[in-house]
Amino acid sequence: MIEISEPAAMRAEAESLRAQGKRIGFVPTMGYLHEGHLALVRASMASCHATVASIFVNPTQFGPSEDFDRYPRDIDRDRRLLESEGVDILFAPTRDELYPPGFSTEVRVNGITENLCGGRRPNFLPGVTLIVSKLFHIVKPHAAFFGQKDYQQCATIQRMVRDLDFGIEVRMEPTVREPDGLAMSSRNKYLTSEERRNATGLVRALARANRAYLAGERSGTKLRTILTDALCEVPGLRIDYTEVVEGETLQTAETFQSPAVALVAAFLGETRLIDNHILGEPLPYEV
Ligand code: AMP
Image 1 (tube, rainbow, N blue to C red):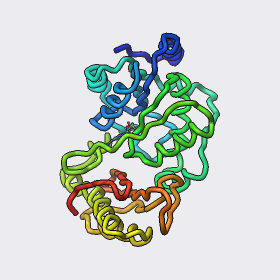
Image 2 (image 1 turned 90 degrees about the horizontal axis):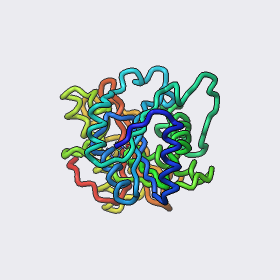
Image 3 (image 1 turned 90 degrees about the vertical axis):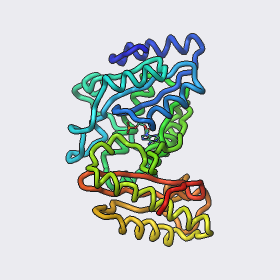
Image 4 (image 1 turned 30 degrees about the vertical axis):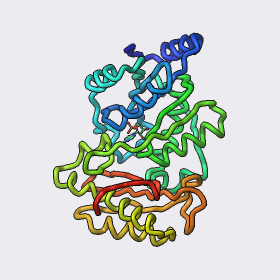
């Protein structure tokens, strides 16, 4: 595995791979890797000649009172994990290389970023579309791999890539879960053991809504109430939002033309967790 920190060197390497006719797969991350990230790496390895993974804790996507400073970091462990997966290039730029003094450009997608996490964390999606645009220009991938765990993020990137003609295939890969159903996340590390036990409340709420959907419930309002009621039963959990939206438009709906997606965000102590499920697909976790 080659490790690169300078954007110019990464760009040169990407151009050389492209000149050799190699299909480049790209997995952008903020590090502190887990099996969810590694599943994206494996999806890239399976369908591309060369895989680039990036690690960059992107300051522009955090709000002033959010966890940028304490976001978990372990580059040595990440390096070993990526190397053992057979990743070709680790791109780990510094903040100054990506955001030099005087940086003043924004990249903003409208229409699908105002609700859900975008509504609660106003810096988040503009920060993501900015950094992902920059990384796409530097890494020059043919395909990029994102997790369904961050459904709105992935949908926003797909929209940006379409609207701005990036010419990159953006793949949404399934959420990887712990054996008890909790969606893997670098932030799970923040949870106390009691919070960790209660954190399965998110997936169990989604499973309850999914069972209702499979039993024929199609009212957005009723499905959302099922999510809210299920989360209210979880000790110590504070709901941030519960939503059931159209999978394509991400708008709240009462009945659904495209797949309905149930999404939840909740705090356990100081830790904010998110999860979602495309209703009708299997999700076998006990309520
Ligand atoms: P992050 O490092 O949290 O910015 O995540 C980097 C990428 O990994 C994003 O595309 C996430 O959606 C994806 N990801 C994070 N957690 C999971 C998970 N549990 N399953 C699948 N993908 C994930």
